[in-house]
Length: 106
Image 1 (cartoon, rainbow, N blue to C red):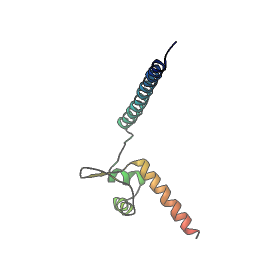
Image 2 (cartoon, one colour):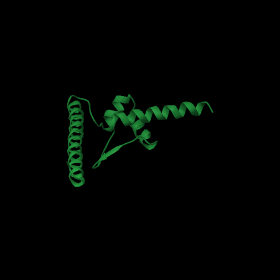
Image 3 (tube, rainbow, N blue to C red):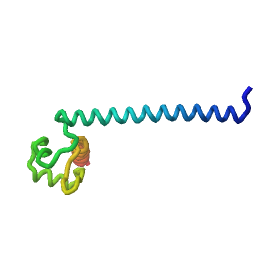
Image 4 (cartoon, rainbow, N blue to C red):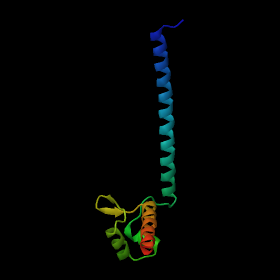
């Protein structure tokens, strides 16, 4: 028969084992996700784009990109360079169009 201290110690040991395994799985999942993102970036799926590339993708002038920045287009600064996350830009445009659309209905 186990006494109370032995049971507590055994339970704590099991909790530690489960926590260690869960942390290992979480780290592994995050690493796999990052590896996939990096692999996609290397295949031509850019994680970030500059103003010229964004203008090209949106089929607008670079001055339009500057105007959008003044209206709150999200940017990422890396040193002196300004970059854009294509997904954040997409969401910004969707939200901007929704606000313009709902503004017309007032």
